[in-house]
Image (cartoon, rainbow, N blue to C red; front, side):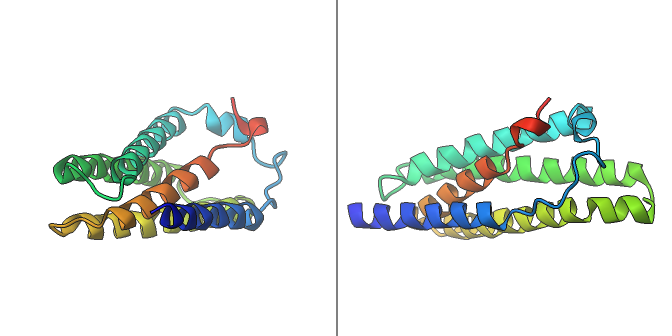
Length: 168
């Protein structure tokens, strides 16, 4: 059991380190007023949903850390809240993007690295969400699978935190 936990922690650390090195730093902070964007109400609500998703990912990690899940229904409820938070974040994002209308070519080019990074992060999160959902659908939920993917989600959500210079 300790060996499996060690291997899972090692995998999570490798994922986190590779994510750090893969981050794209091409966004010119002077060109985009990120502090203004971070003060917007939609961004504040999205960050609250992200924090909520992080909290439920931690709950799933804790529930599955013993190698078994005592209350599968409770884990399913926690997962439902995690998934709902992700859906709400996407809903707010889509609403905000539709309000922006068609962007100029210059603005599209400025935002391209940030959008690519956001899409890559979202894809990484969805891989783990789908894996947890699949694991929870079975009657004998695979706690090790849930533990591994929820730990990876926690690490991914933690990695997505904004750098200090971009915080309000």
